[in-house]
Length: 75
Image 1 (spheres, rainbow, N blue to C red):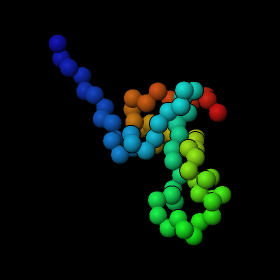
Image 2 (image 1 turned 30 degrees about the vertical axis):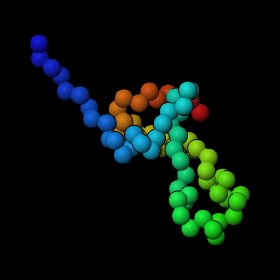
Image 3 (image 1 turned 120 degrees about the vertical axis):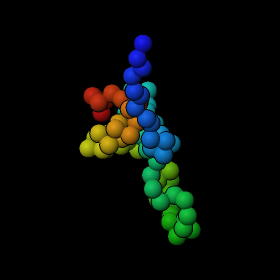
Image 4 (image 1 turned 30 degrees about the horizontal axis):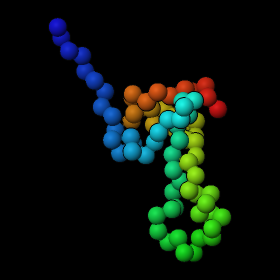
């Protein structure tokens, strides 16, 4: 039989985003790699947490990662 085409996963995006058990897309915060001496502990701790991707960006992320199991109804 004839083979269909497969979507390609955008590998740079695959390393940056992951899906929680409930199907939310999460990412890391920017600003945690260098110049950390001037940032206070509270700020560094807040930035170290995983944070949910904004709903308006879901289309961009799911376009880059077509095989991601995303639940769009999860808050």
